[in-house]
Image (cartoon, rainbow, N blue to C red):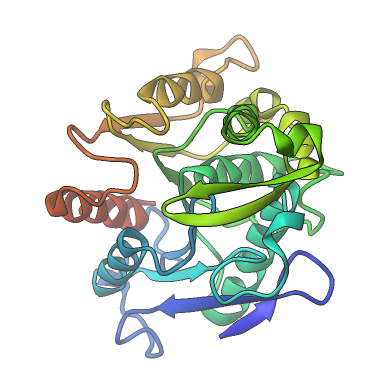
Amino acid sequence: MKFPGGLDDIQLAGIVDRPRDWDTPAPAPFHPSVDGSLRPVAVFSHCFTCNKDLKATVRISRALAKSGVAVLRYDMTGLGGSDGEFAKTNFKTNLGDLAAAVRFAASELGPVTALIGHSFGGVASLVAAAASTQDNSPYIQQPGLFSQLRFVATLAAPSDTQHLATLLSRMNPAIQTRGEGDVTIGGVKWTIHRQMLDDFRSHDVTAWLPKVNCPVLLLHSPVDETVSIDHALRLMSLIQTDRSDQATNLTPVSLVALPGADHLLSNQPADLAFVTRLLAAWCHRY
């Protein structure tokens, strides 16, 4: 299916994995959430240069649907089946696409209760959740869009956007010196424009993370060679920055280690099953 993205005239591709009985009235036991008022609806944001059809994303999303959670997984601009040119995207357009996906999911399934993000999609999910709590946010222009958000879950997420700009410029210095250049990621060649690096360097994620006001689940491998677990520890610290000198106001954050897992969760099938069970438990709990 296609839906309007965050950029004008751009259509994003998405797939909804929904429980079999989603279109029938849900009895009370269907979702043991705290207030019992909402069915769990999640939006899954993929990693940098990935798409909605990454094996881990598909398996987690489908398994969540079997557990009673409706999930929209989608392709950001210029990736997978979505329109647009990837080289012209950046972190701000990612956030616009995420907001568009939440808007579409809410219209198709009901209020979105969870954001799930893999790697760069994880930090985008956290910043979107934080920005939604602020008036006049530069990222989220629709008040109330995230009003029913219960939690954010990240898989191997970085704690900033600058590190990716540094990595890409090291992979091909021409991006910085000439304005564009090609890099190979996952065996695929991608053209990167300097505007992307400039945008990545411009976002102060550390200023947004303390504004996240819903529970957060961080899933990370201690041996992740792409995004080290130091990022997860930093995320936990930043999200729990005390905003009012009262410990009771700290945002609940849970960090779960995935021993031996790789960045794409592709080397140990048991990891996906464990991650899915944990995500499903959080979706139904909150």
